Image 1 (cartoon, one colour):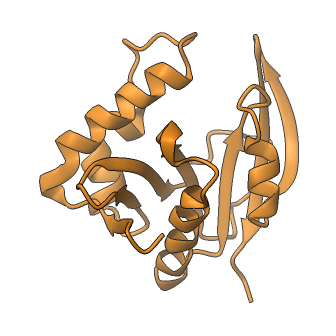
Image 2 (cartoon, rainbow, N blue to C red):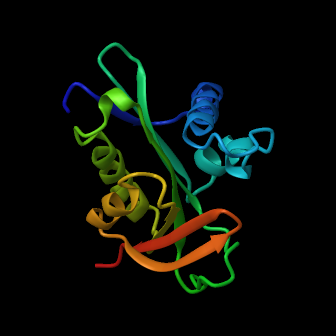
Image 3 (cartoon, helix red, strand yellow):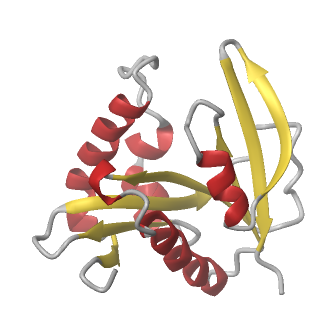
Amino acid sequence: MSEIKITPVGANQVEEIVTYVRNFRKDLFPMLDHTKIPRDVLEFKETYVDHPQGCFLQAHNTEGKLIGVIGMMPYDHRFEYLNYQNQVTVEVARLFVEPAYRRIGLATHLFQALIPIAQNKGIEQLYLHTHPFLTGAFDYWQKQGFKLVTTTIDGDFTTLHMDRSLSL
């Protein structure tokens, strides 16, 4: 893993990262309407680079190729059935790893690099959601210390809502 470099995305890299995220998302979720761009991607710089609770990490191999990303953004309380009102909470999002770099620990290294950044920003709670059709995602997040909070079904999508405390 020492040959892989993980760094925060800077303002001058936003365009490249947004293109990467949009393309990866199209491949991962072909069933979605990709003309509707999620707010965090549309407002990437404001959400991940400029916001005091935001961060987006990128991983590059020795040739400088982008091989994985992960982000955290302020949780927006859009799910009324989740209560994080009294905790500083971020949403972990956009963990994407190139297929050739899966199963070698890159996702874990990306996530582990995010934890001290969150702690330094005073984050108390990490929230994320995943879906059962993403093979291995639920088990992966459980191994990272996340616990299932609730499961919801919206149309054809089953969503697994998970969280993890950063309190000592």
